[in-house]
Every structure is written in C-alpha cells, then in structure tokens.
Image 1 (cartoon, each protein chain N blue to C red):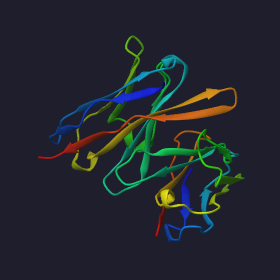
Image 2 (image 1 turned 120 degrees about the horizontal axis):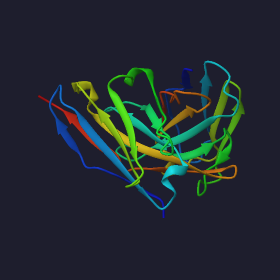
Image 3 (image 1 turned 90 degrees about the vertical axis):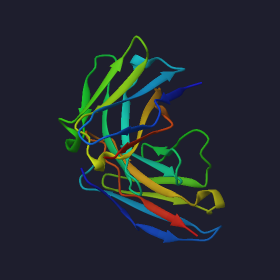
Amino acid sequence: IQMTQSPASLSASVGDRVTITCRASQAIGNFLAWFQQKPGKVPKSLIYAASTLQSGVPSRFSGGGSGTDFTLTISSLQPDDFATYYCQHYNNYPFTFGPGTTVAV
Amino acid sequence: EVQLLQSGAEVKKPGASVKISCKVSGYRFIGYNIQWVVQAPGKGLEWVGLIDPEDGETKYAERFLGRVTISADTSTDTANLEVTNLQLVDSAVYYCTTWLYSGSSRSDHWGQGTLLTVSS
C-alpha cells in the first residue's frame, strides 16, 4: 500500500485552520495514524484509528476519513505546531508512512 | 513509566554490520510488538519492520529483506535491529517504537533514536 500526502508543504500563520490530506493506494479501513516531528526530535504520535487522539494531544488536532482518504486538521495553529506531519497506515504489512507535510511559518 | 532506551550512536565502515538495541521497561515486553523506523538525513520516516517478542515472529519492509534482522531477548526485555553489509545510504537515525493497547485505547512510545553513520 502506497501513502501520499498533500500538500508537501504549506505556509500558515498562528490562528489559521490547517488541513493535511493523506491518501492510501487501497482501502485501509480506519487503520491510519498521524505523527508530528520537529527537526532533530523523536516523532510524536498524535492520532490513531484515523480519528482518536492520543492521550495528552490538544483538542485542536482532529483526524477524519476512512477507506482511502484521510485528513488531519489543526483548528487554530499554535506556535508549537510548526513541524512535519506524517500519516502511516497499519492495515497490513508493511506499515507504510506517507512522505510528510511540512507546516511552516 | 514506559521507557524504550536505545543504544548509543555508531560509526561503521561500508561492508560492516551493526546491531542496535532497544531495552524496554515499564510494561510487559512479551505483550506488544516492537517496530523499527528509520530516517535518513533530511528525509521522511520509513518503516523497517517489527517483531512479536512472544513468539519471535517478524515482518519486514521489502527493501530491508535479507539485510536486516530484528530479534528480541525476553530475558533482558530488549529488541535488536541488526543491519549487515552496511552501505553509505544506511546512515540514518533508527527508532524503536511500541504501541500499547488497553482495550481499544492505544498509547505509543518511542525510543530516543540511534544515529548510525556509515563512512569510509
């Protein structure tokens, strides 16, 4: 299964609503996770099962979709949210990551 | 507290082998898979494979088949990633990670990463 993300990068400002799209090459149900990574840091898990937030993740993050098309939305971008975001499916092996979307100022 | 503690940075020559370890604590090791993820400099995350410590069953991404071996030592609660015949392109940060499920809830935990440098 191949994963694609769009856009590859975007520029946004604090307070903006941001949406990132992830598409699977075949249906994966809701077996989709989202991760945030900042330069030089360990990835942070945000969402699993397409829409369930990991404990401690701010509610401004939300995930949606099922089948082949998924979204990660940040309702009001905060300074701490400038980072690269990856989706990953876990429907079957191998658990492929998307190429990433960088959210920049 | 759940912790995944990885071994330190490595510098290897092309053609050599390396074994990176991931020692876990704070949860039942044999209950949950350990995955390995690699990130080359300036690149995205790439899934390498995983192991079920309970029975040693492994799964690998096709690109790593034959050159990567994932193992688990249940006596020390440690997962290992061995890469043989190292190439310059293997220079990367390698992460171990586990997903702990409690009912339908999941919590993810990551190691701190191990930097591998392959250089002649």
